[in-house]
Image 1 (cartoon, rainbow, N blue to C red):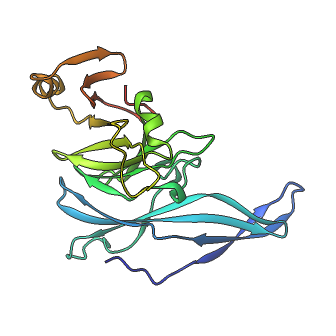
Image 2 (image 1 turned 45 degrees about the vertical axis):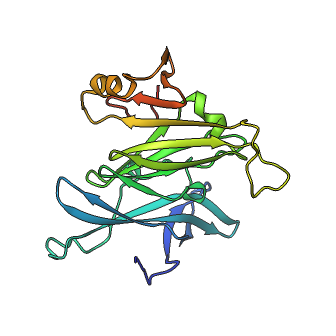
Image 3 (image 1 turned 180 degrees about the vertical axis):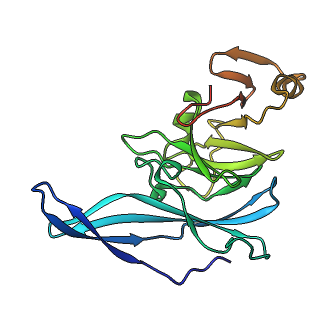
Length: 241
């Protein structure tokens, strides 16, 4: 269990306003239940990451201005101040357009912590990755053919398959009694798997589809209702394609 006692800390900063005068702004760090636990297999270290929302207030009121992320290494040896919280630089933190308010439950897989963001009327759902070793975030777009199955009222979740991240999206046709799925077979399930660690991806794809009827498109390899995506060396904001 992760528990912190320094709830809602505040600080004051001195800034120069648009008139060239000095002004004092109050910075408030509010937070929800955004504490996560992960493991760096290369260094054999466990780490805790906490995410705070940040608001700046002056006489005009509050103005949200993104998030702050802090990391602590928990290795039991207490060397090099490892048990102190380290704040990530802004360029390593969450992009300002992404809020933890829209995060799904987290999933740890293969040295990274993952979240699925909820879709909004003006934003597509995304996968957010935090690499426990490098302490960097990465944003991964989701294939177009699975986007609509992730939007409400359909259900979706992050799962782990063979140590890899997978996005599972499924839609069900419900009877009047919403506690029982309909038997009219108007259901579907799609899945995409993240491959981007330099393995022999082609061999893995052939292994997965060797006994299946497949169709190839620019969106990926379709294996019945399973979709396997080869992602090599993806950078921030690159998509599953």
